[in-house]
Every structure is written in structure tokens, then in C-alpha cells.
Image (cartoon, rainbow, N blue to C red):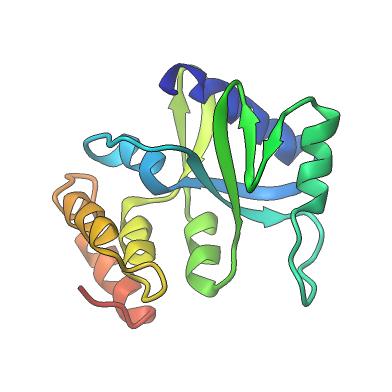
Length: 164
């Protein structure tokens, strides 16, 4: 999957330039690759702000339409880019909004990619709706990263009332 990750980044940047995304940030296990030891994953999770304003119901219709016109296969909740399943997760709360807003632009094989900062990945993993043993393990691995800003982490966790 890693060989095709640059294709995923190119598609995300194209969606931002010409399509249904206002902004995005790589989250989940693929984001861990940039901050700590990589782990096996099935798909690429992407937090997104959609171009159309949020209504009472958020739909990915514009995103799926864009994918169809660009010949990206769709299966269940995934859009496949060069064989890589990509899951788009519209921001649904202030923490996710902040994670997207503060994402870091990094380089991957010459492509600019926005990645959720490790402090926000930890917070996202500790949200009550996402708090599983697997995610707690990922959060614990991230805390060991030299890239962690402990002051920022403490502020984010306090702001969103999150704890280990």
C-alpha cells in the first residue's frame, strides 16, 4: 500500500483544488507512519472539511461523484485510489475541526501531504466514542514519540475533557 500512498496524496490534493474538499488531514494508522513506528492498516483514514457547508445531514455525495468522474472505484464507504482504500471522515466535532486546522504539511515522495499532529491523534484516540484498546495502544505509542509537544498535548486533552 505504501507504494501507492503518493497516488492517494495526489488525489487528495486534486480533490482540494478542483473538487469537493475544502481541506483534509491524514489520520488513523497512516498518520502514525509520520510520527512513530508504522503499523499494519487496511485503509487510509482522511479527516475532511467538505466544500459545501454542513447542513443538518452531511453527505459524501459530491465526493463520490468526483471519484466517479475521475474513474476511482467506490466500494462501501471507501474510494479506491491505485488499489488503496481511502475512507473519508467528515469532521463532526470541534476536536476534529482543530485536528484538521492544525495539521502539518509534510513531504512524502515529493508530494505535500497534510497529517494530523500526534497530539491531536492521541486526543482523537481518547475520545469516548473511539476509545478502544487498540486505539489506547496507539495513543500510548505516540506519547513516546520525540515529536510530541507535551504542553500542547496537555492543553488539548484538558480543553476536550479527555483522559487516559
